[in-house]
Length: 617
Image (tube, rainbow, N blue to C red; front, side, top):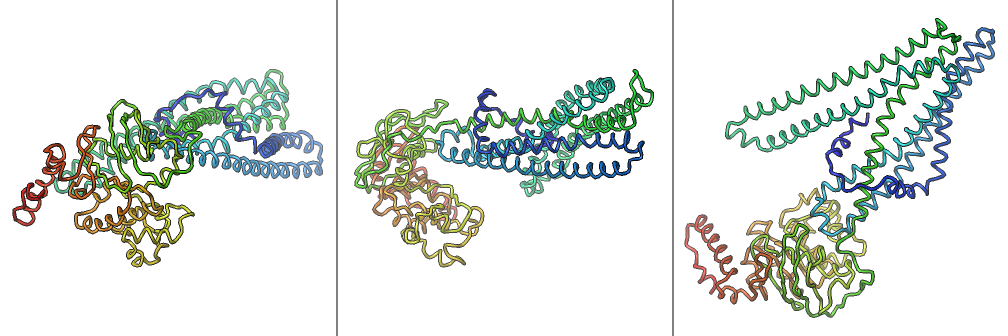
């Protein structure tokens, strides 16, 4: 049954993004079916054929029992027996083809919807992902779209089939005997109502069990990873007791739920037997003046058994359709979410190649919750200049680079290129001018070459070779078994940390960008590897406009200019010597880091380091 679906239970815990009126949603979904109208009409015809074949079976049996056998018509028995088998085969074949056709339509629609959702998400601004973490977002979208696939390919047609089957069955039964049919419906009505409320109850119970299961899984994951700590502190017995308590709680609730579930369905099955007994009783006693033949008796028994399953499924199918519409609600709300950094309609596709100056002009930025990340920040970067951004974490350094990359738009002010707002240019073309190396190394599944060209087909071997030479990473290619065609393990695990960072350096300049942004590009490696990477960085930065974010101030002491960002403001600006002489925020940060380095050196070497003043000199 659908209420066992884990995605359904998890979805129940999700907050709906918004509510789209049902009529509006149907208007949005229907156009996706228009290209498949002929297929759907054919599927509907096949469904009617399959239902008709199923309904005709008991009628054939009644004719054999009431006419052919009493009349000794052996030929009639044979003919109708072959007809029964033929109708059964035709019905099965029609049902099979119908399922295949509808499944193909559903898969086609969902494939297009999934691609559209993914394409749209890829072009949304980072502000959207601040509220919707990518992992959770993609998992939810995939779950919602999968539910829509089930709706389009299985559930909707199954519901329609059950409606037709139920209507046809009741029509034949009423034509055969309205009194007997009414008696059966009187028996079934209370059970149908009871089933509806029972299913609501059982879903809540299974939701509770699912939560307990999730807590146990989380408990195991946390404690298994911490086994050394548990053993060290003698906490293993307590951990066992905690798990046993959780298991017992889940077990007791699960036993009660399964007991009630199986008891209910057992009782429901007994009602079907009771209905059959009523039919036999009425047929045998000719109650209410109803004369019933053996064939009619068998017909009612067969049709009664066909009534129960559609009635059981109605509640489930209608509930699933309701949940599927909620899924469509969420998917369409994502598709309707506009990018906060979308290109202007008249955005220019060409960016001047001879630009001279990049500037932040009174730029302020605040996130949606009202927290100001930048306040009236103004500075200029001349072409070819190397500028470092330093300051405490959370001061606004990364926000500056995000605005430069147009991941966000300034709340006030503008980022300009030779006096023109960068928003006049197309986002895609503007970002081609910028290379980016982040602190967190991210490598994609695929080959080394795929990662260097970031899956783009327009990046040729010459560009890749040049980028690897500039990053001084060409030697690593020869060490790999298949060179650029070497498949990378998950996260690049078959490369060393230094090799992964060199690969990121080369990837950042494969398009030969004018501007290079380094956001803590070497902080994830050890000091020895960092010193080896520094030489590659010197080649990387040569002749490029560079914006470097660094917490290790020793790595940026030789840049042209240092900007000190503190609490969202630009508080100091100058080179290393000028800032150190000011005795301000920069000097405090530098001395603090130097003191920590001296302590570490004394601990490892037992010697005395130079004073900050000597180091500065």
